Length: 133
Image (cartoon, rainbow, N blue to C red; front, side):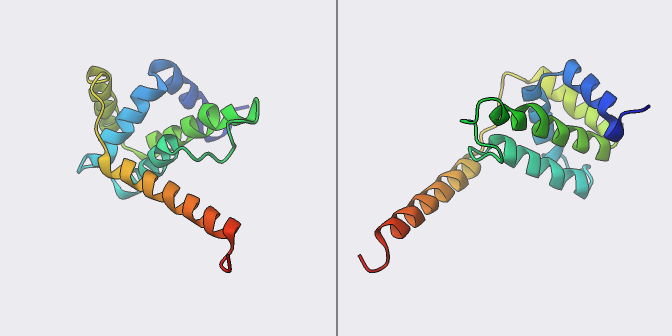
């Protein structure tokens, strides 16, 4: 019986390059002009989830908190690889492996995360004190 959704390809991909290198390759793929729209959008979502401090499964739950990092993010990377033309993905992965020590700076992404956290804290304080306090 063959595993669904190309899991064998997923495990080969996980062994061949580390998750950090794959995420860097996703970043390069997302910014490349020849990347089709669907893989670009999925790569954006995977990177946003990987870099976000907010997880679907909270990290303070002992074993389940690690599942998103061990399963959801690699599955997202596998989906992007499946949607991307093979030569384009291989080229971006090779670039990421060569330049793995030089990470891109995303100041606007950090600003969005800070704004979201400040909005959540503000909403929590407003709810706790109540509108009439």
